[in-house]
Amino acid sequence: MPVKDNLNHIKSGLPAGVELVAVSKTHSAEKILEAYEIGHRIFGENRIQELKEKKEALPEDIQWHFIGSLQTNKVKYIAPYISLIHSGDSARLLQTIQKEAVKNSRSIDVLLEVHIAEEESKQGWHEDELIAYLRSGGHRELPNVGIRGVMGMATFTDDNAQIRREFKNLKEIFDKLKTEFFSSNDRFNIISMGMSGDYGIAIECGSNMVRVGSSIFGERYYK
Ligand SMILES: *Cc1c(COP(=O)(O)O)cnc(C)c1O
Image (tube, rainbow, N blue to C red; front, top):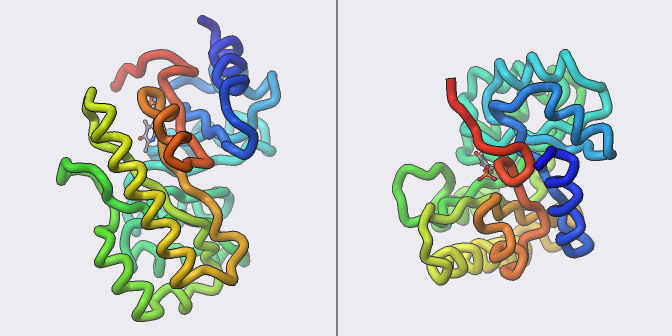
């Protein structure tokens, strides 16, 4: 189906208050424009160079989200314009984002990526590490970083019960962090979880931001 139909179909099924990030990685600027033309503005990319090319080719009012693993030496390339980094997964990365935000005289919004999957390969903080970091007050030394919430990816499996457990776990972690560290911060309010195959479950578990790629743009072919 054309991108517009896929997008309309998915949007019409999302409850109010759930934001959709259209994950456009590997897909062309033309396909992104199809979504743009029906009013979509939030797109997710995971490669610095690809994002740069698309940003230059496409309208200014697109809000670009970075969803992939981010090396500290690459932050400078996206710092001038990125609207949300989903993959804030280490103290060092957060410090680098702080520095680059200052250089660009702006504040950069970030999610704390939490490791909730069984597979070791997935990125993200382990819960206890993250809590130790926040207890040490590391995040209070980042005035130009807007910590907006959490992001996580479930295990790649057909076992829906497992996926549900992992998403519930992330929601509980969000609630815990909110209570202990961000209770007076109204902007700590994003739970980014759910992709094409599991966003329905994610929403049932409390997601308010889903990152959907292949169900909108079709299969991806990696070069
Ligand atoms: C690619 C990707 C997605 C989208 O995956 P689909 O299965 O195509 O919806 C979502 N989140 C992250 C972090 C990704 O890398």
